[in-house]
Image 1 (cartoon, rainbow, N blue to C red):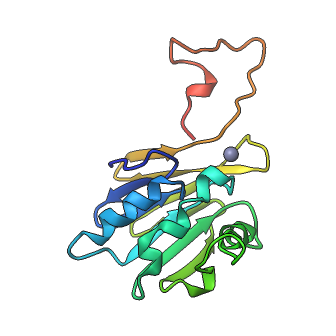
Image 2: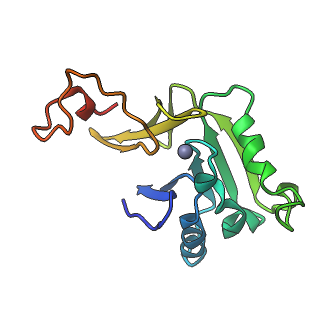
Length: 176
Ligand SMILES: [Zn+2]
């Protein structure tokens, strides 16, 4: 796994599959990196935790979205009506950006990920977090190893829970 971002947008390459978490400003540099590869990966899996501005504002500048034979599998959790997709695409209405979502050359495939799903042999699970407006983290698991991407989450810490948990033993150290 390698990070390429200054703002929420994290890329993990498990085998040849490209998983991208969020589309903050860091996704711009990731797009340039992906385009420089030979061959360029054409199927990209993008997981949106929530649509607060700092998690989506880089998407219009993600070069692979402007490449004709690229497919972006866009995952979100929580809403069965793909409203996160609508919010992500809405930031590209002509009032905000000169290229509309409909003008993108890549195929954007919106998918719900509530619970878990196998993607190219990797078990991906969505995990709700505690954040205004709702937010989800994601875990990626293969071969007994697991990566968790948990961003915005306000922990509710009961009075009888030791925090910070310097002994690394409390309930807030349990991975989802
Ligand atoms: Zn947020």
